[in-house]
Length: 408
Image (tube, rainbow, N blue to C red; front, top):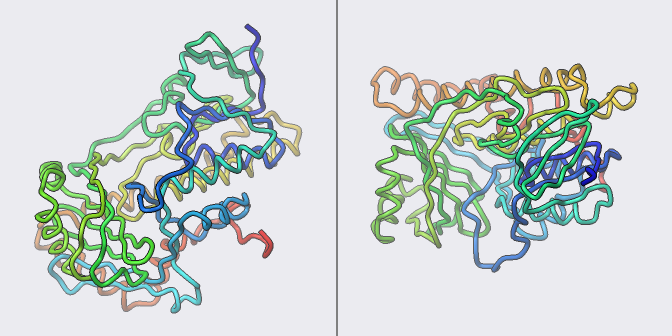
């Protein structure tokens, strides 16, 4: 059976993989996008996805530059104008307001399904992308300098470059022989959608407790998406609680910052893990998003890092083509790895440090974290650093992450 040939094959059609395929096609590359199953494209208006992302300004610009943002706005996108972070017992408290920064908002909370559906809609209109759904990847080989993927049905695809965007358990990373390092946190995250008695005030709230942080991410009207990181035992107990008891526990944990909170729909629990690929690249192969790095969700940076990976990779590939270089050359891909690995590792380590600083009952650390939050709220340089993180600034952004033209 003859192999179909592409410039790039993207393995994984989630938020990061679909973004990568669309961005590459807009640069003129012929792309195949592989995904196990087509994502939902329609859903009941009153339903809500349990998984959401807190998109920074840089991520918003990436999606706007790809002409995807208006589609997302037509579904459901919630801007938040304030962020409040506080410790369980102490005086530590920090508040950010978009108006203080001269910004219209601090970011947007978007259901993951909205991002994926919008990207897939745009991909369906792109002639240079072929969507391939339902094939199981069996093996990887090289033929005459090209990467070859063999599938369970005997079919084969070839490309100059394979991009692994297939998540934390990446099959492509495994086949490429790229080692993966990591450890499980002693935490699980419970996610749910809840209604707030006093509305959400366009504010993202995060309270640190010894067992882990509780994040309240504002959605439309009076709703929040919650991410409650806690011990595996407590997470399972919260999952099994009768709804009325769960509502009482959650409202107390939030210290009634928005009044009583009440569950809307289902709950789910998933384990938390720190993970990083030893290398992001092999000749003809590049990893992006969770295939390369997985971080604690307490600051909502995971998908933002993945989208920045895509932007950096596309910049490198565009420059390589202009120089007459093959996009799969190791030296080309090293430029991508150098652009992203250091920043991703720094964010991973910062989130890991925050997790250990705030999720414990050590009295000395309790004092330190309260002093830290209090100082950060009062000392302008520290505030600016927190604000840059919230907005996705403070690093050299890829072309896609920069402010688009007014008509984009």
